[in-house]
Image 1: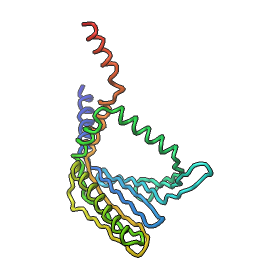
Image 2 (image 1 turned 120 degrees about the vertical axis):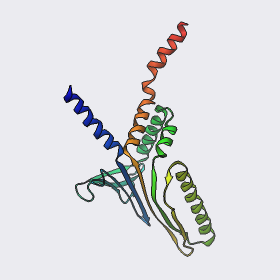
Image 3 (image 1 turned 90 degrees about the vertical axis):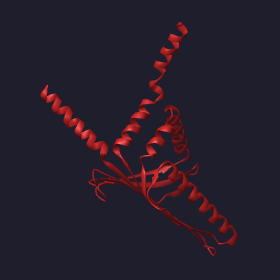
Image 4 (image 1 turned 45 degrees about the vertical axis):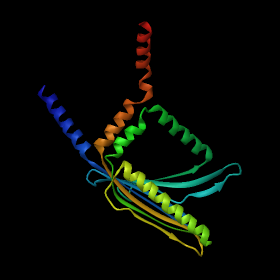
Amino acid sequence: MKTGMVVIIIVSFFLLLLASMKVSVAIAFRHVRNDEECKIVVRTLFGLFRYTIRIPLLKPEWDGKTPQVAFVQKQGVGGTRDKEEKKGKLTPAKVARFIRQVKRFLRQVVDLHEIMKQFYRHVTVTQWEWKTRIGTGDAASTGLLVGLGWSLKYMIIGAVSRYMNMKTVPVVAVVPAYDQAVSETAFACMIHFRIGHAMVAGWRVIKHWRGRRPARWSTARQANEGY
């Protein structure tokens, strides 16, 4: 009995310690001409654990039937060591299948929007930098794109500030290039949340999964019909 109590206390202590740990996610995206790269770094366990995902250059290709995009994804634990490289091709069929899977997931979880809203309240944004340089070579069209760029950026910042805790002043810039056609952007963002809040959100997703409810609903319906 004493041994069981000690095990329960130790397990509970580690669960509480795990739930209180913070997770930091750093997102960096860069687009310069034909060079694109996205880097995501996840840190936790007081910085001892770090997981990095790199999605570098995307190259459009044509196989004679459908357009596709080739990519190379690198991921690893502990920074630059132990990297695993994955190569693949993104086709319209794969994109359509992914969209169908996302729609199916959204239909399966009841009140997913409310669950995510409650989770976002515990997410803190400590870095937000988004700089863009754009031009078409024509002053009128460049000015129009710059105005649209400012509107889009402030709309996204407003949505993020509404659902998350923005603890930093966003650094935003849209620089026009009137004399040349150019498209460059650099984005850097860092968010933090506790593992416990993510665990609660995951538990609520499982709880509100539609597949768990039909039996209960059918039982209740049969009971009502009996009356």
